[in-house]
Image (cartoon, rainbow, N blue to C red; front, side, top):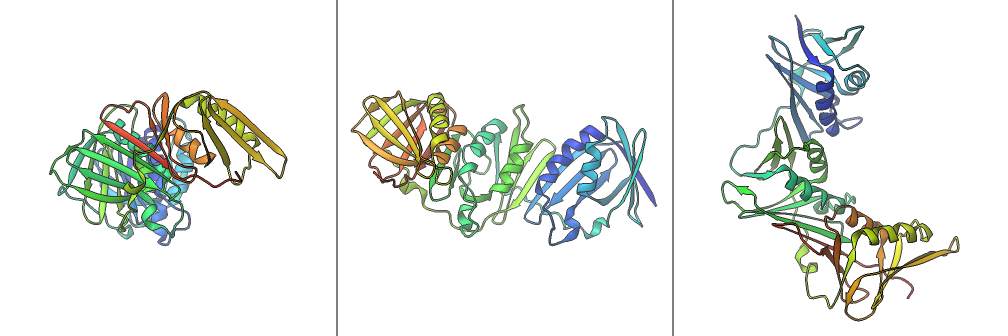
Length: 376
């Protein structure tokens, strides 16, 4: 039996692009290379999954049917991308799964699959519910995900640790060479529950892309196995990483003896210039800190290049030289809010603590970077 619905191509593409973020190439189960379309009168619900993460989103459509089908994701999204902004009709036979996309000037045909073969939906019920403003969650995500480990053997570091306590939410990420911790006070914790959950980075990256420019409420639900984030018409759900997170608090301390205040912009620009002359494989640089400021230096012995630059700063403490990874500094600078940074040192072989000189109201962001050993 033929089924059909009408939808705007631009609106459809926006939601398909979001849903496409979870689809992997050459999946173990072939049908998850498809989008699941569920038409419910004037609402088109779109689902995609990689079996660990699920995206559900929706778009308005014109229809009188209640039906569902799966459609090849790549073929569909590549087609919609090159269609002008217009209303299109998608029709399909729910026995043969033959699909036809009808535009103002063309018809495009492909074959889908039976929707009953698609993985069953997972629901996270309302046992534990948290609400937070979308702009605050976006800052939490951007301030931490860059520090997540890409080493798949370190499963407990392959995600962001979310800690809930009363009305505060803390995100922590580490790859053993750096730690980024961001705490925000001001969430709505409906049940007053406390938890510590490791959320896969992929889920957070996908949801961050779904956050609109306008400030909206985000609802977070979780249980012992799954966590979901929802905003407006989109839900992202993922299995939790069932591991114990590393004891990060032992390296985040505030008893460092030497403190400097430096402009984030000045430090970033100096690093960009100096690292042009450094080793592109190690990314090692040296900070020599004293009364005049920070002397940043780098060298590449293979190509016989080197550079150094003085960055003015306010400094209290004894002279110290320390080696750092420039990539870690660039990642931190890109994802830290504030005009000035406060940097604390103890010794050349001890972790460096970095934070904005002025924290955002109701928030605390702390970064710790492990130094590298250089030829002194």
